[in-house]
Image 1 (tube, one colour):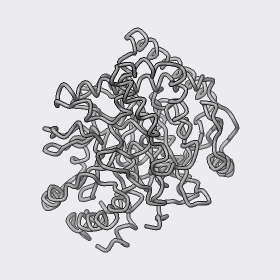
Image 2 (cartoon, helix red, strand yellow):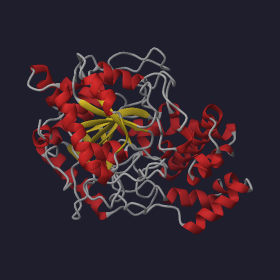
Image 3 (tube, helix red, strand yellow):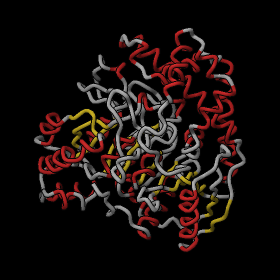
Length: 493
């Protein structure tokens, strides 16, 4: 199959071609590999090719909803037996997965042909994808800019046409930020829907989840059906799901929705005029479709929520670093400097403080529930500013030297916890202040590609729903996709 024809179809469309016998899985795979080899040198999306594994699989009989469709998985947690899971870090060089993760197994059960792993920042801890071990992933729409993170490799590969949909995950915006940066659709499912096993019951207290980034809404809906096909027997609880498939519910009219919107950064920082325009134009589009739209936002202390989110990340990183040292024999120098710095801050967090901040998560959930008692959805920018340039957020050399000294004398953790440094770290969320709310509260949220800057960079808008609102989000996204199509748009690569 020629690339131009391959690019016309989403994953559902490609699966239909395979099912009808019009094309063989091996043909699709070779087209995907050829496209990957053509563009990956420019965007650095795939860091661990699995071509031979995929060719052997494509030659076997395949069944499932997406049988024969080429697919990529994220190089973080999404384990494939016999293949290294790198996590964007030197520390994992001695690790090879011994079994498939639950999400990978469900993708394989759906008949997908996995042929590579995509780039991610070290341990998924940033909203950009520039790990030292693999080098930066670049945005196909403008290669001087980031595709976002931490699922930046997945988004870059989908935007560049390598695959129509790719595996991703989201612990603070890591599906929505790359989707919003690359002109793609990204849904973060609600807490507990997607299994985290077999190694985990849930990740980050349920604030992190696997999912996908796609060109079309229906691909994401079908993928959600695949990932939630059966309960996770090792999960912490049984999450409710609708009686009908998400793919069917996504095709239904959303009805008339009450939507509150805000462009105000929860951190109080300035928001780019482009991000404001994205929301205002979307609000006008929604009103034209018959929805009730007005300016409104939850009554939540955004700066405190962000501090609590960051403190959670510090502790999670500290635990992750210690586990890699203990289980894989990793050393301090196997981790990037800022990972070591934030982990040091996590080690300084007392257990009582951590329990207290987790208690505040419940307060944020209840405040957001109060908002959803009045409005079906919250509309915000996905990003506060257009995607950053590659290297723009690197630590200055002088600061690196100071931190290295503090780490050597074991004072870095105490410094991280000072108000001055905490405010500096909060400043780093200026570009992405809107996405963490959905992770802490466990609510589903999506980024929809409805805006482009004058420079040609995509800039998505975010919708946050209440508990169990995945069908509403998907049906609204389908309506917006029909009114303002985006899947046909292709970057200048």
